[in-house]
Image (cartoon, rainbow, N blue to C red; front, side):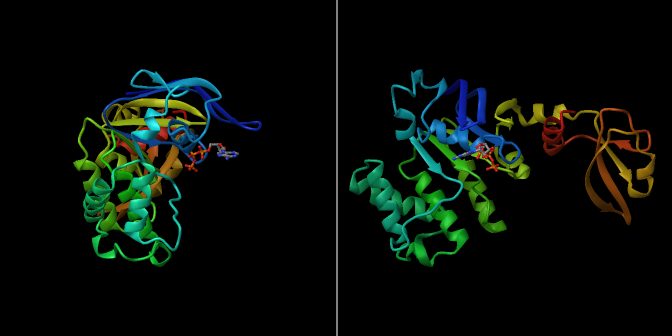
Length: 282
Ligand SMILES: Nc1ncnc2c1ncn2[C@@H]1O[C@H](COP(=O)(O)OP(=O)(O)OP(=O)(O)O)[C@@H](O)[C@H]1O
């Protein structure tokens, strides 16, 4: 279990984390938030890549100030995964395995398993410099899985993946045993809906919401309307205009509103509605 308590982080005068309180237990967590909310800073702090300035993080009860157990038991896919261009795919896996202090025989076995899992077995001899962006992302995912770590941290894992590879990533995550802690930072709300048991929403360096997907949806209960585009002028002030879509030849707009909108029809919320209600303060 990872317990974050009163964690603060500043870059010069910029406060990136402002007394963050959150607990990550076993299970799959989606970490959502607008650009600059502090998601990457939080993840990097958990991994010991930023020193703790104020507050603390406990991994299985031990403070990160005194122990680097969390970093040693974690696989991490950074937002921008890069590697030496001259290394081959399997060379990267051997390099990461060595950094993780894994015995060579285990590295070989795990390399085979993780490359097969990410559809890279046939590219094992290809150099990093000759991989496409999507292939490099898959290699990043493969090295995260190496050694089956207890904690897996993925920072925007599906960015740059084609639909088939996104599906494959979802299947990989679905196969991870639920006694692991998996944290997935993403902007793709659909991915959270498909994958995550719990959702954490960050805003301006703080945790604005933690709960299940159902609880996130419930935030938008009785606040979501659909209205034909031609009736848009009848909306009461305070409505937030969401997606525009077409149904049976009519154009509609999805609306979020805390005041009743008689010109629209109330519809059940989805998790994107819940997320938008939090970020718009509705
Ligand atoms: N190395 C740094 N130096 C200065 N400021 C930084 C640094 N890293 C992050 N910041 C700032 O800290 C804040 C939080 O950034 P962070 O990258 O953690 O946000 P994020 O939620 O991951 O954003 P995104 O979704 O865009 O990746 C931002 O205002 C950012 O500009």
